[in-house]
Length: 120
Image (cartoon, rainbow, N blue to C red; front, side, top):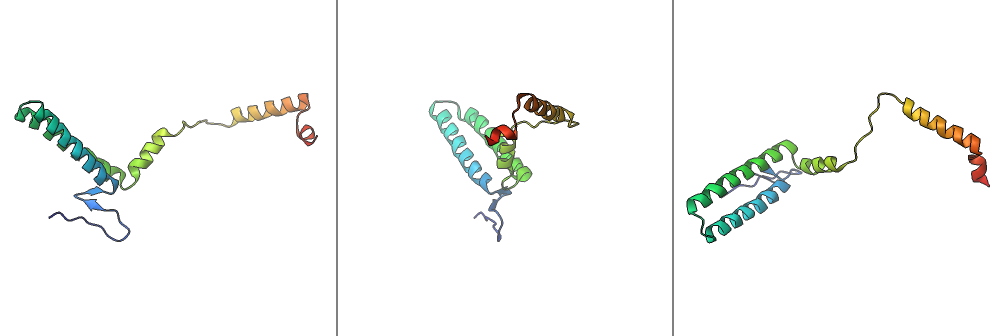
């Protein structure tokens, strides 16, 4: 019937779809089937039902195929984690940070705060 390729230390691959994308594809097919059933039972014309579900199914397959090829086995997970990460501070020089440390040091001298107060 259909051949599922898997080598040693390699992810499962089915028709070019790798690893977790196979389960995403299976869940998507079930949802598209449910969409078809709902449309058919609600009395929508069979041609309109097919006209809706077939393009949705083909587009879904192409998106899954694209993500599988572009991000690989765990790349989509890494991409989603990168989007949730905190923004980075970019600066061309370290002078703003030097000014902060100099100001903090000057405040410690004026208030007498420092290691001598921590020891007490």
